[in-house]
Length: 186
Image (tube, rainbow, N blue to C red; front, side, top):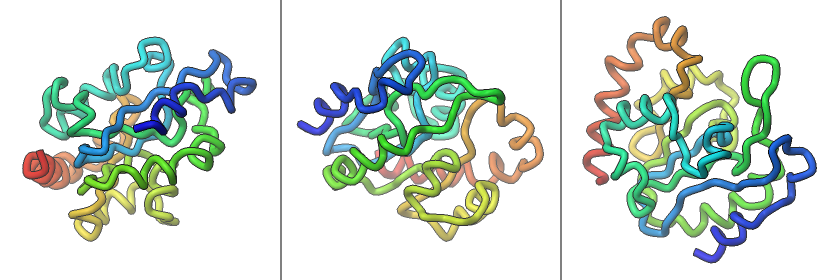
């Protein structure tokens, strides 16, 4: 896809990025599952490999897929709301700059015509993909009404351990259904 090459060479946000531009995404027109995330971490910025940390390990566990499956662009498109690491704030990484999604997402997503499930991770992706006013927890609780086309997940970051402990229903009810749905699509 020509648009991916254009995104990889994008420097629109470079002046505002503390580590410079290094757009990272994974996509193919064959992908049946879209993972719509927040923004790359510093680790992803350095390696160019999305979810290559504890968050990715947890996410692959929730999906019940191997690394080989997860990093196969013909199976999974991984499209963050911003393609470059936005930098660090007081309580974690900064929010994804909106210029990225405004510039690239509509054209890129229009080419992902085989996607049958969009896994929406985090509040910024939720607002963009679902135009939702509900809180993240409310959207995750609403998972049954969103399937089979969408499902909202909390960020799989270790920082969300407290949320997972408060919401045991997520791993007991949502994750098994998610795994079965992903398995069917693969």
